Image (cartoon, rainbow, N blue to C red; front, side, top):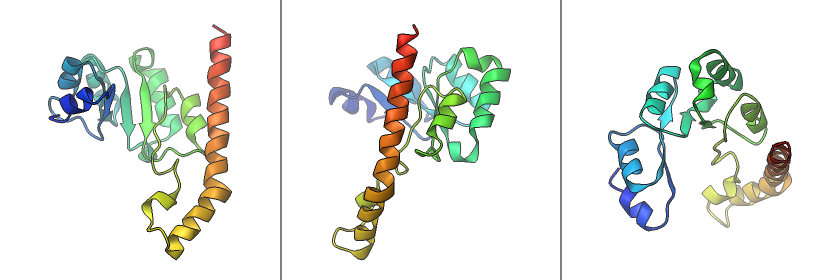
Length: 159
């Protein structure tokens, strides 16, 4: 929470958290920064919505599923009110399933980038990670970007 002011002064327009720290949402609102706290249950999501949160990080999404998100948004009053961003367990291979289930956006970190960024350059592990990124990771990421781009382009044309 103490870092929000500094981040804002450096140009940040949003702040993510893997939890909902005390004062996080309120300080983000005071600073004009989009607060993206985390929740996992319908009740937690609704509570954040009632506090003015516009985008909620569903974390650890890997413990849930797109079908659970779809159910949560379809059956409860949450669907008309919430923008959910699954994160943690989202990958290029399942991102579109999350979007189809009603996710506003998806969050990916380690599943989107290659393991070469976390291995020591010059080691066999790094060489293997670079090769894996070139043969598997990059093509999967590029395919996902094309799919998302096409979806958004088509959505804007129909409006």
